[in-house]
Length: 173
Image 1 (cartoon, rainbow, N blue to C red):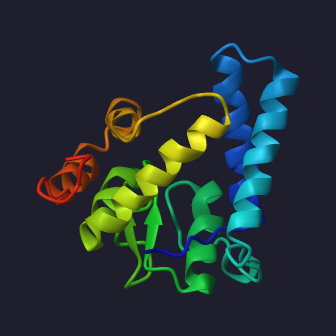
Image 2 (image 1 turned 30 degrees about the vertical axis):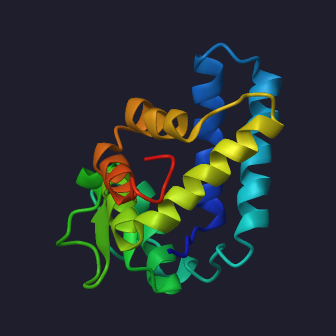
């Protein structure tokens, strides 16, 4: 339903922020580093064509408020992305990103994606719940949806998924 793109710098920043987040929750630094590195490796494995090269020539050419965010727009432009998904909206003013490149929050992205096909979104939730049991943590579909609301405030996306359930044919409804 979407094609993610990133560059190596984005992944480095994600790994750093994951380590910081995990250690902030009490995780030992070595374990936090292992888990963050595993996340990045899994992202690269799952989306083998997502990493963009050749963005460097555009880095610094957008006059963003935070120069350290320039590489994000550069990668999006080189990849032909339609959107940058970030909670840091203020550092990507619409007047400074190229036309045709939208800047949206993760919550809006999730809602827009679910709105395209709520049934496929529910299938993804089912897959997450099923996979969770293999790691020893059993989550129900409703547990996954509740976590999306509680942790990430994805209220609209979850409402769309839940409203997409057909109570006459879907026992989960």
